[in-house]
Length: 453
Image (cartoon, rainbow, N blue to C red; front, side):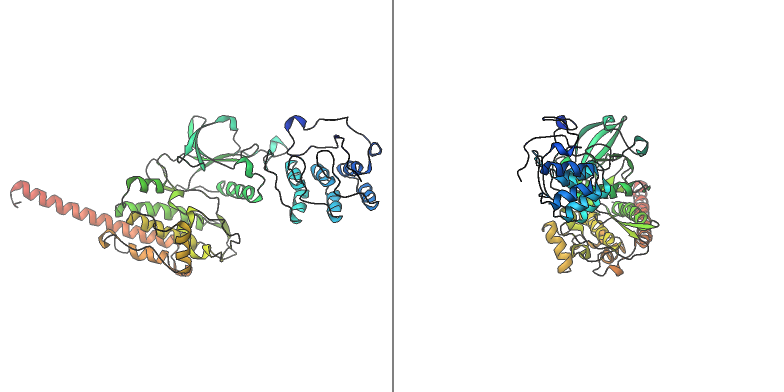
C-alpha cells in the first residue's frame, strides 16, 4: 500500500523535530477520526490513540506494520511518543522495526525517552533497541513536576563560565556561581542518547550526594533539568597532582610525599569503608587528585567508580576499553584483564602514585598508557626504583612493593597503609629534627670558636 504524502498532527511530534514544528500542524489540518485516512495512516492514528484492537485489526488485514507517514514516522514512533505500551508491544510482536528512524533521525526509543515514557523505554531497551539519534533531546533526568526538583538543582542561568581547565581539555570548566569560583563537569549534548553516558552521570551524581570528607572533592550541586547535564564541584585553586609534578619537574621531598600520600590514603579509606556500600574508585591517578589552598590532596572524579555491596566481595567489568586512556598507566592488572576485582585495585594505583612522587616521573613513562597496563597485567612488570635508597624513608619502598603485589589479597588495606605512613612520617620528622639539632650545635661551636672550619 502506498504511503500517504500528507502530513498531519497525529499526536506528539518527533523528539528531534525542529522546535517550530513541535505541537503544531504543518499541513492540511488536524484529523479527528480514523475514517478520514487511508489504511496506512489509520494505523499510525490508532497507534497514537492506544487502540489495541483497531491496530490489530488493520495489521491482520494486511497493512504493513512499518508503514510511514510523510516524515518517515511509523506507528511504533507514535505509540512510543504517547506512552501506549500495549500498542508498542503488539507492534513489536507483529514485526515492527524497533530501530526505524524518522526524517530527523529519531528512533522510537528516543521519542519514548524524550516524553519520559519509562515503561515503554524499558520494553524497547529489552528488545535490543539501538538509539542512534544525535540531535536535540530533553534532559533525561527531567521531572514532571517542579515540586520534585531536588535541593541540589542549580539554575544554569546563575553559572558564568570562565575557561576550560586544564588548558586544552574540556573535562572541567572553571566558572563562577553566586560569586564563588567552581568547577563544572558536563555531559556533551551529542552523547545524551548514549545510555552508558546517561547512566554514568546518574551514578556519579547519586554517589557524590553521599560523600563528605576533607580528602574528597566537595559536591556543590548539579544541573539535571536542562542540557547540558552538569555536575558542580568545589574549585581547587592549586590544580591537580599531575600538573604540580609536571610543573616542578623533579621528585618531591620524602617528607612531603609521605604527607600527600596520607591525604590520598585517608580519602580512599573513607570510600572503601563506607556502609552499607563501599566505593571502589577504579580511576585513581595524579590527574584525579586535587590540591586545595592548604596544598592538601582531595580525591575526585568518580565517573568510573563502582559501589561494592558489603554482601559481595567483588565486581566485574565486562566492557573492553571502558577505562582506556591515561588512566591505564595506573590500572591494576586484574582490572585491565577484565577480571573480578575489589578495593585492592585502588591500592595498586596508590602504590604507583606514591613511587612517582619519590621518583619524579610517571611509572613506565617510556611506554604508552596501554602498553604500561599490559606490562603490569601480562608480564608482571613494575616501575624500577631509580633514585638513591636514602630518598626512601625506612619502610616506604617495602610498602610500595606490597601495594602493587600481583596478588590483590597481599596488598594492604588503606586502613593499614595509614598506620604505616604515620609511623614513617613520625620517623622522618624525628630524623629531620635531630639533623637540625646537630646543625645548630655545630653552628654554635663555630660562633664561639670551639670548633674550627
